Length: 201
Image 1 (tube, rainbow, N blue to C red):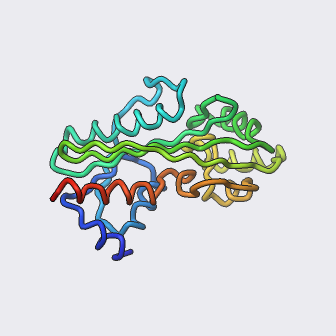
Image 2: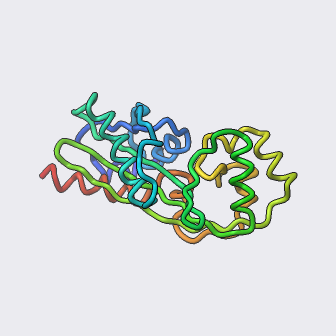
Image 3: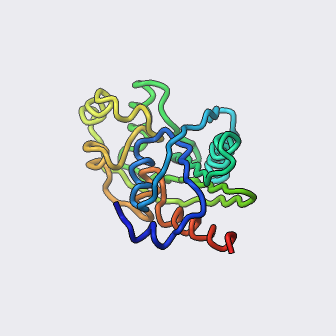
């Protein structure tokens, strides 16, 4: 566990991650802080997707707020990630056929990944997001079918994980923060948590 980031943060309260994502749970350990995981019960389809960056920020805030209501003494972190192609939001696929459709759309093209992050503690509310551009090489039908059959794309925005064995081989280029694509921009979250020091003085 990384003691450097934890020592620099010196957080004033316990930390809760309001997410069921195992990728986010793994990434937050890079900060070397003890984190409890309490997934938020939020209907993601109830939010307006017409402005994707605002959508992920509002949804990250809603997730954090849902958990904070039950644990008002804690620092609560919410996050949400989506994939955008030609203005179309590609969230988690409904089923395997939808995953195939998404991967066909992304094949050989550049898309945008946006992750919103919210940090809530006492009266402090910090919300921000990061954008990364990802280019896929052209994918064969065999590759798409094999990846979807593995089941891995079904719980991921855009129907792929850049950290997966197959998903990693699909990516030809990336412009921006890698961790944004995985689901939690660590540098952004670190800076947001550092700001809490200002409010404890």
